[in-house]
Length: 230
Image 1: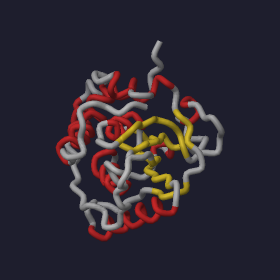
Image 2 (image 1 turned 90 degrees about the vertical axis):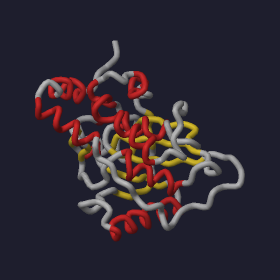
Image 3 (image 1 turned 180 degrees about the vertical axis):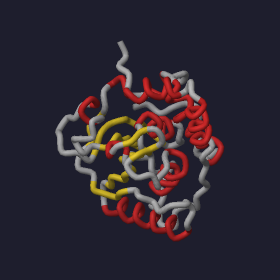
Image 4 (image 1 turned 135 degrees about the horizontal axis):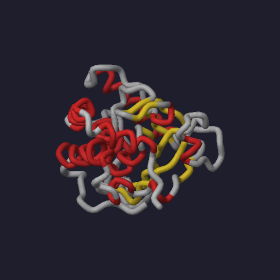
């Protein structure tokens, strides 16, 4: 039997109320058009693989967004930023391990740059101004984080956040943390490709599917219909 996140049960019940319907309508309409990063990595001349790890609320939606980006080799849901080795969802969801629901994105730097991926992350994958929550999900496990793997990633991420804050493209200041990546643990199998496998799930339909739709609308040159593997 497929395990179900507590938030799915909650949101399914919320859907029958007018307040829930209005909440989801507002969430799905959220669109932000951002400038390209002024500081970015140079596109590679040869195909290869590099890794980016980010966190921005439920990993189902973040994974789904990046799986539809051209140049992505794989996107895997998992956990980063905590103190417990080999964490499991039931414990992470309590908010006591320090982990954030994260996504490891493996990409080809000759097809898409790190800065372009950050643009997608801030534009459609999540709201970087929400502190320790995203939409209906609340807790430190849903915080916004960029886990950098090297000094170049740190430099690009910090420069882009400063650029966006200076331009005041969001109504509130960005709260995204930029911290070194210490470990990434893949989530349980039933969390992988969840949005693709369960498109009619109320949580996916009203909270995550609009993110993929916004990706297609705002980044037509980067969007692809088929998904990357994980």
